[in-house]
Length: 123
Image (cartoon, rainbow, N blue to C red; front, top):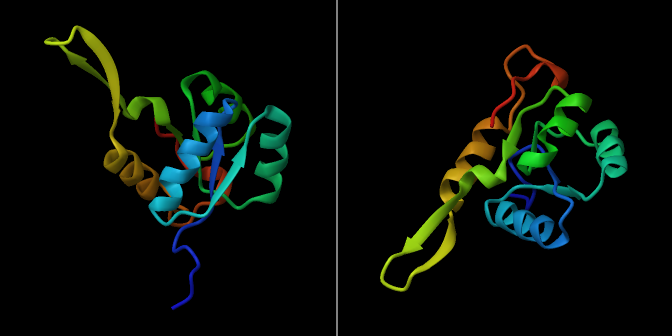
């Protein structure tokens, strides 16, 4: 068996470098082939060159992705859950890695009979 991913490349569009890196690492740990872009120009080029079936991004960038391509969009911020520790009076966040990877996996395929540009959107 080769080391190639069983999935189409996942395009990650997050302008924050730390967020871009962390999202890519989580996806790679789930055996995805990841292509990362940090700005709109890179996104436009990647959408032309990469046969991605899903784009992972943040809430504020969903509109930009949707204006350029008709492929599913997964909002990584939807998987960040508040975690309030009442005893310490602190609030932190938990990331639901399993649900995130499952959502990307579910959207990482071309629908039957559809082209790359005919897939539905998912948040």
